[in-house]
Length: 460
Image (cartoon, rainbow, N blue to C red; front, side, top):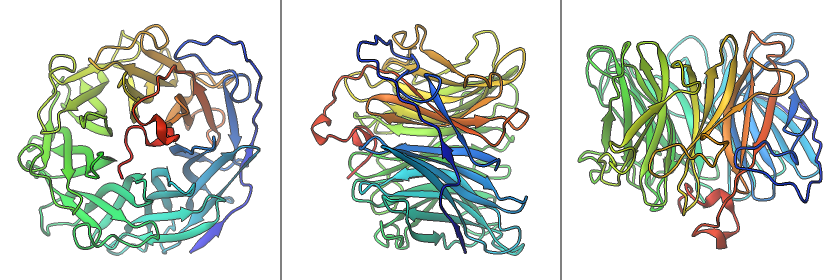
Protein backbone atom coordinates (compact mmCIF):
# COMPACT_ATOMS: atom_id res chain seq x y z
CA UNK A 1 0.00 0.00 0.00
CA UNK A 2 1.35 3.44 -0.87
CA UNK A 3 -0.04 6.84 0.07
CA UNK A 4 1.25 9.99 -1.58
CA UNK A 5 -0.27 13.21 -0.39
CA UNK A 6 0.36 16.93 -0.31
CA UNK A 7 0.20 19.62 -2.94
CA UNK A 8 0.57 17.59 -6.11
CA UNK A 9 -1.68 20.10 -7.81
CA UNK A 10 -1.23 23.85 -8.14
CA UNK A 11 -4.68 25.41 -8.31
CA UNK A 12 -5.04 28.81 -9.95
CA UNK A 13 -8.28 30.53 -8.98
CA UNK A 14 -9.31 34.10 -9.69
CA UNK A 15 -12.65 35.43 -8.45
CA UNK A 16 -14.22 38.51 -10.02
CA UNK A 17 -16.83 40.67 -8.36
CA UNK A 18 -19.85 41.29 -10.62
CA UNK A 19 -22.80 42.19 -8.41
CA UNK A 20 -24.82 43.69 -11.27
CA UNK A 21 -23.99 41.09 -13.89
CA UNK A 22 -26.99 39.70 -15.81
CA UNK A 23 -26.50 36.11 -16.89
CA UNK A 24 -28.67 33.70 -18.85
CA UNK A 25 -28.90 29.96 -18.23
CA UNK A 26 -25.97 28.24 -19.90
CA UNK A 27 -23.66 31.25 -19.74
CA UNK A 28 -20.19 30.71 -18.34
CA UNK A 29 -20.11 32.21 -14.86
CA UNK A 30 -17.44 34.96 -14.94
CA UNK A 31 -17.27 35.04 -11.13
CA UNK A 32 -15.66 31.59 -11.21
CA UNK A 33 -12.16 30.76 -12.25
CA UNK A 34 -9.36 32.13 -14.36
CA UNK A 35 -10.06 33.90 -17.68
CA UNK A 36 -13.64 34.40 -16.60
CA UNK A 37 -14.83 30.84 -17.12
CA UNK A 38 -12.49 28.17 -15.75
CA UNK A 39 -9.37 27.47 -13.82
CA UNK A 40 -6.66 25.09 -14.87
CA UNK A 41 -5.12 22.46 -12.61
CA UNK A 42 -1.53 21.53 -13.33
CA UNK A 43 -0.49 18.23 -11.78
CA UNK A 44 3.23 18.91 -12.23
CA UNK A 45 3.32 17.34 -15.68
CA UNK A 46 1.71 14.09 -14.52
CA UNK A 47 -1.00 12.85 -16.95
CA UNK A 48 -4.34 13.08 -15.20
CA UNK A 49 -7.48 11.39 -16.56
CA UNK A 50 -10.65 12.87 -15.08
CA UNK A 51 -13.47 10.57 -13.93
CA UNK A 52 -15.30 12.26 -11.06
CA UNK A 53 -16.51 15.52 -9.50
CA UNK A 54 -18.64 16.29 -6.46
CA UNK A 55 -19.44 19.40 -4.44
CA UNK A 56 -19.98 20.09 -0.77
CA UNK A 57 -22.34 22.49 0.96
CA UNK A 58 -19.60 24.94 2.03
CA UNK A 59 -18.67 25.73 -1.58
CA UNK A 60 -15.76 23.34 -1.94
CA UNK A 61 -15.44 20.49 -4.41
CA UNK A 62 -13.20 17.57 -5.26
CA UNK A 63 -12.36 16.07 -8.64
CA UNK A 64 -10.74 12.69 -9.18
CA UNK A 65 -9.06 10.56 -11.79
CA UNK A 66 -5.82 8.76 -12.53
CA UNK A 67 -2.22 9.87 -11.94
CA UNK A 68 0.70 8.48 -13.93
CA UNK A 69 3.56 8.52 -11.44
CA UNK A 70 6.87 10.05 -12.46
CA UNK A 71 9.24 8.73 -13.63
CA UNK A 72 6.78 6.70 -15.79
CA UNK A 73 5.71 3.93 -13.49
CA UNK A 74 2.37 2.73 -12.13
CA UNK A 75 -0.98 4.53 -12.12
CA UNK A 76 -2.61 5.66 -8.87
CA UNK A 77 -5.94 7.13 -7.81
CA UNK A 78 -5.58 10.92 -7.89
CA UNK A 79 -7.65 13.74 -6.47
CA UNK A 80 -7.62 17.54 -6.36
CA UNK A 81 -9.81 19.61 -4.10
CA UNK A 82 -10.87 23.20 -3.57
CA UNK A 83 -12.02 24.63 -0.28
CA UNK A 84 -12.72 28.32 0.34
CA UNK A 85 -9.27 29.88 0.40
CA UNK A 86 -7.32 26.62 -0.12
CA UNK A 87 -6.61 24.02 -2.75
CA UNK A 88 -4.52 20.89 -2.90
CA UNK A 89 -4.49 17.25 -3.84
CA UNK A 90 -2.91 13.88 -3.51
CA UNK A 91 -2.87 10.29 -4.69
CA UNK A 92 -3.31 6.77 -3.38
CA UNK A 93 -1.80 3.49 -4.49
CA UNK A 94 -3.00 0.06 -3.33
CA UNK A 95 0.14 -1.65 -4.70
CA UNK A 96 -1.10 -5.24 -4.79
CA UNK A 97 1.62 -6.43 -7.16
CA UNK A 98 2.01 -6.91 -10.89
CA UNK A 99 1.84 -3.54 -12.63
CA UNK A 100 0.47 -1.85 -9.47
CA UNK A 101 -1.91 0.13 -11.70
CA UNK A 102 -4.85 1.44 -9.66
CA UNK A 103 -7.54 3.23 -11.66
CA UNK A 104 -10.24 5.58 -10.35
CA UNK A 105 -12.92 4.56 -12.87
CA UNK A 106 -15.72 5.02 -10.31
CA UNK A 107 -15.13 8.69 -9.61
CA UNK A 108 -15.70 10.43 -6.29
CA UNK A 109 -18.58 11.08 -3.88
CA UNK A 110 -18.77 13.44 -0.91
CA UNK A 111 -20.27 12.27 2.35
CA UNK A 112 -22.47 14.27 4.74
CA UNK A 113 -19.50 14.94 7.05
CA UNK A 114 -17.51 16.64 4.27
CA UNK A 115 -15.25 13.66 3.66
CA UNK A 116 -15.06 11.89 0.31
CA UNK A 117 -14.59 8.43 -1.12
CA UNK A 118 -12.91 7.36 -4.38
CA UNK A 119 -13.73 4.12 -6.20
CA UNK A 120 -12.31 2.04 -9.03
CA UNK A 121 -10.07 -0.98 -9.35
CA UNK A 122 -6.65 -2.10 -8.13
CA UNK A 123 -4.49 -4.36 -10.29
CA UNK A 124 -2.82 -7.30 -8.59
CA UNK A 125 -0.49 -10.10 -9.69
CA UNK A 126 -1.33 -11.86 -12.93
CA UNK A 127 -3.31 -14.57 -11.24
CA UNK A 128 -7.01 -14.68 -10.39
CA UNK A 129 -8.18 -12.12 -9.52
CA UNK A 130 -5.93 -9.78 -11.49
CA UNK A 131 -8.18 -6.80 -10.76
CA UNK A 132 -10.08 -6.02 -7.56
CA UNK A 133 -12.74 -3.43 -6.83
CA UNK A 134 -11.20 -0.75 -4.65
CA UNK A 135 -12.39 2.08 -2.36
CA UNK A 136 -10.43 4.71 -0.44
CA UNK A 137 -11.90 7.30 1.94
CA UNK A 138 -10.71 10.68 3.25
CA UNK A 139 -12.07 12.99 5.94
CA UNK A 140 -13.11 16.63 5.47
CA UNK A 141 -9.45 17.72 5.73
CA UNK A 142 -8.40 15.21 3.03
CA UNK A 143 -6.70 12.96 5.60
CA UNK A 144 -6.67 9.25 4.74
CA UNK A 145 -9.31 7.24 6.66
CA UNK A 146 -9.50 3.74 5.21
CA UNK A 147 -9.16 1.61 2.11
CA UNK A 148 -11.14 -1.48 1.15
CA UNK A 149 -11.03 -4.16 -1.53
CA UNK A 150 -14.16 -5.93 -2.79
CA UNK A 151 -13.95 -9.62 -1.80
CA UNK A 152 -15.24 -11.29 -4.96
CA UNK A 153 -13.99 -14.23 -7.00
CA UNK A 154 -12.93 -13.02 -10.46
CA UNK A 155 -11.86 -9.62 -11.75
CA UNK A 156 -13.87 -6.70 -10.34
CA UNK A 157 -14.15 -3.08 -11.45
CA UNK A 158 -16.20 -0.33 -9.77
CA UNK A 159 -17.51 2.21 -12.27
CA UNK A 160 -19.76 4.40 -10.10
CA UNK A 161 -20.02 5.46 -6.45
CA UNK A 162 -22.49 7.51 -4.40
CA UNK A 163 -23.11 8.31 -0.75
CA UNK A 164 -26.23 8.31 1.38
CA UNK A 165 -27.21 10.96 3.93
CA UNK A 166 -26.07 8.67 6.75
CA UNK A 167 -22.61 8.28 5.19
CA UNK A 168 -23.12 4.78 3.77
CA UNK A 169 -21.55 4.17 0.37
CA UNK A 170 -23.19 2.51 -2.61
CA UNK A 171 -21.36 1.50 -5.77
CA UNK A 172 -21.86 -0.38 -9.02
CA UNK A 173 -19.63 -2.10 -11.54
CA UNK A 174 -19.05 -5.60 -12.85
CA UNK A 175 -17.06 -8.75 -12.30
CA UNK A 176 -15.86 -11.57 -14.52
CA UNK A 177 -16.65 -14.86 -12.84
CA UNK A 178 -15.94 -17.13 -15.78
CA UNK A 179 -18.45 -19.96 -16.12
CA UNK A 180 -19.62 -19.99 -12.50
CA UNK A 181 -23.12 -19.06 -11.32
CA UNK A 182 -25.16 -16.99 -12.12
CA UNK A 183 -23.94 -17.26 -15.71
CA UNK A 184 -21.06 -16.93 -18.13
CA UNK A 185 -19.24 -13.69 -18.89
CA UNK A 186 -19.40 -10.46 -16.89
CA UNK A 187 -22.20 -9.77 -14.43
CA UNK A 188 -23.37 -6.52 -12.88
CA UNK A 189 -22.21 -5.98 -9.30
CA UNK A 190 -23.81 -3.63 -6.75
CA UNK A 191 -22.46 -2.99 -3.26
CA UNK A 192 -23.22 -1.15 -0.06
CA UNK A 193 -20.45 -0.30 2.43
CA UNK A 194 -20.82 1.37 5.80
CA UNK A 195 -19.25 4.77 6.43
CA UNK A 196 -16.39 3.11 8.33
CA UNK A 197 -15.35 1.05 5.30
CA UNK A 198 -16.90 -2.26 6.30
CA UNK A 199 -19.40 -4.17 4.12
CA UNK A 200 -23.03 -3.68 5.15
CA UNK A 201 -24.08 -7.23 6.05
CA UNK A 202 -27.72 -6.11 6.08
CA UNK A 203 -27.42 -5.76 2.31
CA UNK A 204 -27.55 -9.21 0.70
CA UNK A 205 -25.67 -10.73 3.65
CA UNK A 206 -22.20 -9.51 2.66
CA UNK A 207 -22.72 -6.03 1.22
CA UNK A 208 -22.74 -7.26 -2.39
CA UNK A 209 -25.48 -8.18 -4.86
CA UNK A 210 -25.30 -9.28 -8.47
CA UNK A 211 -27.62 -9.28 -11.45
CA UNK A 212 -27.34 -11.06 -14.79
CA UNK A 213 -29.60 -10.52 -17.80
CA UNK A 214 -27.91 -13.38 -19.74
CA UNK A 215 -29.53 -12.62 -23.09
CA UNK A 216 -27.18 -14.85 -25.08
CA UNK A 217 -23.86 -14.66 -26.88
CA UNK A 218 -21.15 -13.75 -24.39
CA UNK A 219 -23.83 -13.01 -21.73
CA UNK A 220 -21.83 -9.96 -20.64
CA UNK A 221 -23.79 -7.63 -18.36
CA UNK A 222 -21.99 -4.51 -17.14
CA UNK A 223 -23.21 -1.74 -14.82
CA UNK A 224 -21.65 1.71 -15.08
CA UNK A 225 -23.93 3.99 -13.05
CA UNK A 226 -25.67 4.01 -9.66
CA UNK A 227 -28.18 6.11 -7.74
CA UNK A 228 -30.64 5.75 -4.85
CA UNK A 229 -34.37 6.37 -4.52
CA UNK A 230 -36.04 8.43 -1.80
CA UNK A 231 -36.99 5.20 0.00
CA UNK A 232 -33.39 3.93 -0.06
CA UNK A 233 -33.53 1.46 -2.96
CA UNK A 234 -30.51 1.23 -5.27
CA UNK A 235 -30.84 1.62 -9.03
CA UNK A 236 -28.12 0.84 -11.52
CA UNK A 237 -27.67 0.98 -15.29
CA UNK A 238 -25.30 -0.26 -17.94
CA UNK A 239 -25.44 -2.70 -20.84
CA UNK A 240 -26.58 -6.23 -21.57
CA UNK A 241 -25.24 -8.16 -24.56
CA UNK A 242 -27.72 -10.00 -26.78
CA UNK A 243 -27.22 -13.25 -28.66
CA UNK A 244 -26.43 -11.38 -31.90
CA UNK A 245 -23.67 -9.40 -30.15
CA UNK A 246 -25.56 -6.12 -29.97
CA UNK A 247 -25.90 -4.22 -26.68
CA UNK A 248 -28.96 -2.67 -25.01
CA UNK A 249 -29.49 -0.35 -22.05
CA UNK A 250 -29.81 -2.50 -18.91
CA UNK A 251 -31.51 -1.18 -15.76
CA UNK A 252 -32.02 -2.88 -12.38
CA UNK A 253 -33.45 -1.89 -9.01
CA UNK A 254 -32.58 -3.48 -5.66
CA UNK A 255 -34.46 -3.36 -2.38
CA UNK A 256 -32.78 -2.00 0.74
CA UNK A 257 -32.00 -5.58 1.74
CA UNK A 258 -30.10 -6.25 -1.49
CA UNK A 259 -32.57 -8.40 -3.43
CA UNK A 260 -33.90 -7.57 -6.87
CA UNK A 261 -37.07 -5.49 -6.51
CA UNK A 262 -39.92 -7.47 -8.10
CA UNK A 263 -42.16 -4.37 -8.09
CA UNK A 264 -39.91 -3.03 -10.86
CA UNK A 265 -40.61 -4.63 -14.25
CA UNK A 266 -41.76 -7.86 -12.57
CA UNK A 267 -38.30 -9.18 -11.74
CA UNK A 268 -36.27 -6.08 -10.83
CA UNK A 269 -34.55 -5.69 -14.17
CA UNK A 270 -35.28 -4.10 -17.54
CA UNK A 271 -33.74 -3.93 -21.01
CA UNK A 272 -34.32 -0.97 -23.35
CA UNK A 273 -33.30 -1.10 -27.02
CA UNK A 274 -32.94 1.88 -29.39
CA UNK A 275 -31.65 -0.11 -32.43
CA UNK A 276 -30.87 2.86 -34.69
CA UNK A 277 -28.33 1.19 -36.93
CA UNK A 278 -24.75 0.05 -37.18
CA UNK A 279 -24.27 -2.86 -34.80
CA UNK A 280 -27.12 -1.51 -32.61
CA UNK A 281 -24.90 -1.04 -29.59
CA UNK A 282 -26.82 0.95 -26.94
CA UNK A 283 -24.93 1.53 -23.68
CA UNK A 284 -26.36 3.04 -20.49
CA UNK A 285 -23.71 5.32 -18.96
CA UNK A 286 -25.44 7.50 -16.33
CA UNK A 287 -28.53 7.27 -14.12
CA UNK A 288 -30.59 9.50 -11.81
CA UNK A 289 -33.88 9.23 -9.94
CA UNK A 290 -36.19 12.26 -9.90
CA UNK A 291 -38.57 13.36 -7.17
CA UNK A 292 -41.43 11.39 -8.75
CA UNK A 293 -39.33 8.21 -8.44
CA UNK A 294 -38.90 8.06 -12.20
CA UNK A 295 -35.61 6.56 -13.33
CA UNK A 296 -33.72 8.42 -16.06
CA UNK A 297 -30.82 6.80 -17.91
CA UNK A 298 -28.56 8.43 -20.50
CA UNK A 299 -25.93 6.79 -22.65
CA UNK A 300 -24.62 6.08 -26.12
CA UNK A 301 -26.76 4.94 -29.05
CA UNK A 302 -25.00 3.69 -32.17
CA UNK A 303 -26.32 4.63 -35.60
CA UNK A 304 -25.20 3.80 -39.11
CA UNK A 305 -23.04 6.95 -39.16
CA UNK A 306 -21.78 7.33 -35.59
CA UNK A 307 -23.21 7.74 -32.10
CA UNK A 308 -25.96 9.81 -30.49
CA UNK A 309 -26.98 10.53 -26.93
CA UNK A 310 -29.81 8.23 -25.86
CA UNK A 311 -32.13 9.04 -22.95
CA UNK A 312 -34.87 6.88 -21.45
CA UNK A 313 -37.26 7.60 -18.58
CA UNK A 314 -38.93 4.75 -16.72
CA UNK A 315 -41.82 4.90 -14.27
CA UNK A 316 -41.58 3.45 -10.78
CA UNK A 317 -43.12 0.16 -11.94
CA UNK A 318 -40.55 -0.26 -14.70
CA UNK A 319 -42.67 0.75 -17.69
CA UNK A 320 -41.53 3.37 -20.18
CA UNK A 321 -42.87 6.85 -19.35
CA UNK A 322 -44.76 7.96 -22.48
CA UNK A 323 -45.00 11.54 -21.15
CA UNK A 324 -41.30 11.74 -22.03
CA UNK A 325 -41.03 12.41 -25.78
CA UNK A 326 -44.21 10.37 -26.36
CA UNK A 327 -42.34 7.05 -26.18
CA UNK A 328 -40.26 7.19 -23.01
CA UNK A 329 -37.01 7.59 -24.93
CA UNK A 330 -35.24 9.91 -27.35
CA UNK A 331 -31.86 10.47 -29.00
CA UNK A 332 -29.96 13.55 -30.15
CA UNK A 333 -26.59 14.66 -31.49
CA UNK A 334 -24.70 17.88 -30.81
CA UNK A 335 -23.89 19.47 -34.15
CA UNK A 336 -27.24 18.69 -35.74
CA UNK A 337 -25.54 17.57 -38.94
CA UNK A 338 -23.80 14.35 -37.91
CA UNK A 339 -23.98 11.67 -35.25
CA UNK A 340 -20.97 13.09 -33.46
CA UNK A 341 -21.19 11.99 -29.82
CA UNK A 342 -17.99 10.53 -28.36
CA UNK A 343 -19.07 9.82 -24.80
CA UNK A 344 -21.76 10.45 -22.18
CA UNK A 345 -20.37 10.85 -18.67
CA UNK A 346 -23.02 12.10 -16.26
CA UNK A 347 -26.71 12.82 -15.75
CA UNK A 348 -28.26 15.13 -13.15
CA UNK A 349 -31.88 16.07 -12.51
CA UNK A 350 -32.68 19.57 -11.30
CA UNK A 351 -35.05 20.18 -8.43
CA UNK A 352 -38.80 20.63 -8.81
CA UNK A 353 -40.66 22.30 -10.32
CA UNK A 354 -38.46 22.10 -13.44
CA UNK A 355 -37.26 18.45 -13.18
CA UNK A 356 -34.91 19.36 -16.03
CA UNK A 357 -32.52 16.62 -17.13
CA UNK A 358 -28.88 17.72 -17.48
CA UNK A 359 -26.47 15.54 -19.50
CA UNK A 360 -22.75 16.09 -20.01
CA UNK A 361 -20.24 14.38 -22.25
CA UNK A 362 -17.94 14.90 -25.21
CA UNK A 363 -18.42 15.12 -28.95
CA UNK A 364 -16.41 15.24 -32.15
CA UNK A 365 -16.15 18.85 -33.21
CA UNK A 366 -15.66 19.18 -36.94
CA UNK A 367 -13.40 19.58 -38.79
CA UNK A 368 -11.16 18.08 -36.08
CA UNK A 369 -10.72 17.68 -32.35
CA UNK A 370 -13.23 17.28 -29.57
CA UNK A 371 -15.21 19.40 -27.12
CA UNK A 372 -17.23 18.90 -23.98
CA UNK A 373 -20.97 19.54 -23.98
CA UNK A 374 -23.83 20.12 -21.59
CA UNK A 375 -27.39 19.49 -22.80
CA UNK A 376 -30.61 20.22 -20.89
CA UNK A 377 -33.97 18.56 -21.55
CA UNK A 378 -37.20 19.69 -19.97
CA UNK A 379 -39.67 17.40 -18.22
CA UNK A 380 -41.32 16.48 -21.54
CA UNK A 381 -38.04 15.41 -23.15
CA UNK A 382 -37.70 18.48 -25.38
CA UNK A 383 -34.63 20.70 -25.28
CA UNK A 384 -34.97 23.44 -22.67
CA UNK A 385 -34.32 26.46 -24.90
CA UNK A 386 -33.91 28.74 -21.88
CA UNK A 387 -30.51 27.07 -21.56
CA UNK A 388 -28.06 28.62 -24.04
CA UNK A 389 -30.87 29.33 -26.53
CA UNK A 390 -31.17 25.77 -27.84
CA UNK A 391 -30.66 23.53 -24.81
CA UNK A 392 -27.02 22.78 -25.64
CA UNK A 393 -23.76 24.40 -24.55
CA UNK A 394 -20.40 23.80 -26.17
CA UNK A 395 -17.53 23.81 -23.64
CA UNK A 396 -13.90 24.49 -24.48
CA UNK A 397 -11.24 25.87 -22.17
CA UNK A 398 -9.72 29.10 -23.55
CA UNK A 399 -6.47 28.43 -25.36
CA UNK A 400 -7.08 24.69 -25.73
CA UNK A 401 -9.80 24.67 -28.36
CA UNK A 402 -10.33 21.34 -30.07
CA UNK A 403 -8.90 18.99 -27.46
CA UNK A 404 -11.30 19.10 -24.53
CA UNK A 405 -13.31 16.22 -23.07
CA UNK A 406 -15.79 16.14 -20.19
CA UNK A 407 -15.04 14.30 -16.96
CA UNK A 408 -18.06 14.79 -14.73
CA UNK A 409 -20.67 17.34 -13.65
CA UNK A 410 -22.10 18.36 -10.28
CA UNK A 411 -24.74 20.78 -9.02
CA UNK A 412 -23.10 23.76 -7.34
CA UNK A 413 -25.62 25.83 -5.40
CA UNK A 414 -28.04 25.58 -8.32
CA UNK A 415 -25.39 26.19 -10.97
CA UNK A 416 -23.61 23.54 -13.02
CA UNK A 417 -19.98 22.69 -12.25
CA UNK A 418 -18.22 20.77 -15.03
CA UNK A 419 -14.73 19.29 -15.09
CA UNK A 420 -12.66 17.53 -17.70
CA UNK A 421 -9.29 17.19 -19.35
CA UNK A 422 -7.60 17.24 -22.72
CA UNK A 423 -7.40 14.50 -25.31
CA UNK A 424 -4.21 12.48 -25.43
CA UNK A 425 -3.34 14.06 -28.78
CA UNK A 426 -3.78 17.54 -27.32
CA UNK A 427 -1.00 19.92 -26.29
CA UNK A 428 -1.40 19.34 -22.54
CA UNK A 429 -2.85 15.86 -21.95
CA UNK A 430 -1.89 15.98 -18.25
CA UNK A 431 -3.96 19.04 -17.39
CA UNK A 432 -7.46 19.18 -15.92
CA UNK A 433 -10.01 21.97 -15.97
CA UNK A 434 -13.14 23.06 -14.12
CA UNK A 435 -15.76 25.54 -15.26
CA UNK A 436 -19.15 26.69 -14.01
CA UNK A 437 -22.34 27.43 -15.99
CA UNK A 438 -25.00 29.75 -14.68
CA UNK A 439 -28.50 28.38 -14.00
CA UNK A 440 -31.61 29.99 -12.56
CA UNK A 441 -32.95 27.64 -9.89
CA UNK A 442 -36.28 27.83 -8.12
CA UNK A 443 -36.19 26.42 -4.60
CA UNK A 444 -37.60 22.91 -4.54
CA UNK A 445 -39.29 20.89 -1.83
CA UNK A 446 -36.02 20.21 -0.01
CA UNK A 447 -34.92 23.82 0.26
CA UNK A 448 -35.32 23.77 4.03
CA UNK A 449 -32.44 21.28 4.31
CA UNK A 450 -29.99 23.97 3.24
CA UNK A 451 -27.98 21.40 1.30
CA UNK A 452 -28.43 21.45 -2.46
CA UNK A 453 -26.56 18.13 -2.88
CA UNK A 454 -29.48 16.24 -1.33
CA UNK A 455 -32.22 17.75 -3.48
CA UNK A 456 -32.77 14.91 -5.89
CA UNK A 457 -30.72 11.76 -5.49
CA UNK A 458 -29.48 11.16 -1.96
CA UNK A 459 -31.72 8.78 -0.08
CA UNK A 460 -31.89 8.51 3.72
